[in-house]
Image (cartoon, rainbow, N blue to C red; front, side, top):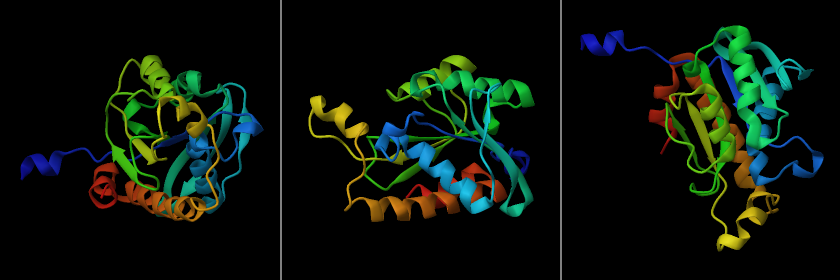
Length: 199
């Protein structure tokens, strides 16, 4: 019981969406992290600004539950996302466990989300870069299911393809669910959100 009381509640301070910056990547499965942080910024009334120091688009403000939050979209391209994330952490003197990284995952069915406090990159190049730049894989993440491709050759086309008209209602619902999951994590911590939204 005592141990439970002393347990640290992990609340995100910097929420990062992963994606690629060129317009040809807009609305693709691989850019779902960008889409979600855009959705958060819109719902919370934050305005994106280009920040050269962070090599990304950045905004901050007070989210629901009066929690100060920063949002980041790295402009480094997916494979170098860690450079941008590291720059923000260093500037604000934040620890890795104050992060929440949002990114696409082919191993999850379309429209599912999974929050975790740590883990490997799972073959995702953006996550590999972040783990490499932080020298640590103990940081929260939110994986967004984009569904599997059919056959290995189709993987790149699947990841860089856009969601179909049939898939868009699922993605729109997912945006709303992810917003609720993140707002709960700002209020009660990531683990509380995991227990309610990982099913």
